[in-house]
Every structure is written in structure tokens, then in C-alpha cells.
Length: 175
Image 1 (cartoon, rainbow, N blue to C red):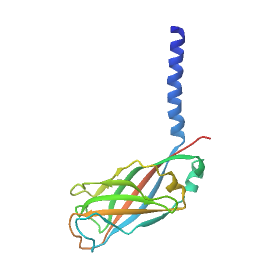
Image 2: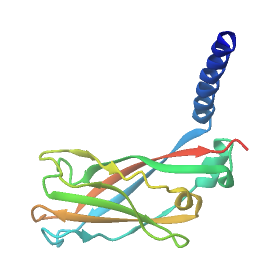
Image 3: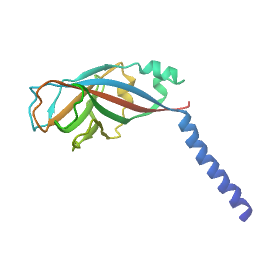
């Protein structure tokens, strides 16, 4: 019995690490950058939706470049969403109290993908918390829409443009 236990244990360890390595080989990232505009007339305090941004995907090309197809994609999640003020230059996020980001498409309803409930003072860039929502159907579609809800901490005197850098983690099935 003891002679069988060691080989069996070794086999289980090898199989477990092999599965992780295979999944790593089938995982890649898709990056999208979009601009979000906060207008100077935006109300202070309440969580209010901003103008939605429609994103045309090039996912099929990304899938092809990573040697897979849309029908083999089994899991897509938002791994990172970073915000940076691009206009006006030198602006920080002191004007912002909280922010939520949503994704939607014609084929699928709206899903919250990231948020930040309390924006730190004097921050020049922000990394939002991902909800780890399953986003397969959104990235497989030709277009999806990004909608933002923001609550301002103070009035803004001029329009502010924010770059949203999104990074999606994609895992495909080998078969």
C-alpha cells in the first residue's frame, strides 16, 4: 500500500500543476482605452450617469492572434481598470467622490464591472475595484457600451476628460 501511495501522490501533484500551466497557455489579455467626459455643468453630490461610450471591439482579431476563436472563450473578466485625467493637464481627482463603471450590449443587459466608493485626495490616477463579473458575451459581441456613474465632491469649472484603461483577462478552452 505504501509503495502505491507515493506514486499516486506524485501523479496528483504533476496533474495539478500541469492543469495550471495549460490554463496559463490559454490565457491572454485584451486592452481597451476609452475617454470619459465630465462636463462642467455636472451636479455635485448625487451618483449621476455620464454619457455612455460605445466601444467597437476587435475581439475576433484578438482571439485569432491568440490562436483561439470566440466559441472557445470560456471566461472573460476585468482584471484592471485605471483612470487618469488627460484634460486639463495637471488635474487630480479631488473633484470626484465616487465612481461606478457598467458594461452593456444589445444581446446582454447591463452589468457593473468596477467601482471606487471613496476617491483618495490628491490622486492623479485611480485603480478601480473589479466586480469580477463574467464578461464573455460582451467581448464576443461586435460592440458594447460603457456607462459611468459618478458623484462629484465639488463643482468643476471646466470639462474634464478621463482616460479609462481597461484590461480584460481572457481564458479559452483548448478544445
